[in-house]
Length: 72
Image (cartoon, rainbow, N blue to C red; front, side, top):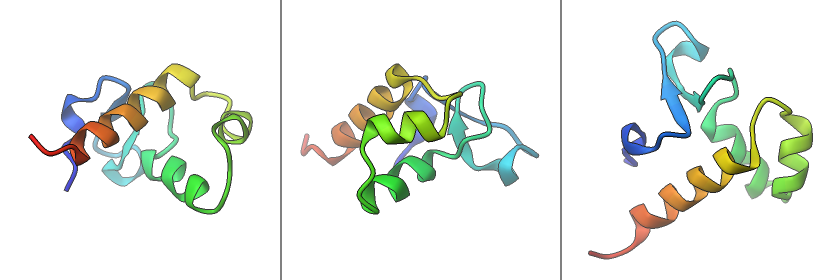
């Protein structure tokens, strides 16, 4: 499982969205980004649909996920 605690673009607060990892300062779950991309959405569309999330946050989350897949 991916360790989101080292990604500054996200936060986990008990009682907010059932403790799911969300984009910092929002109630938008990180998994919403990946679900939308899997369904064919672009990053631009995601940002339009979730205006509280910034492009920088999305880029940080995608970079964090990419780094986690790299072999050390």
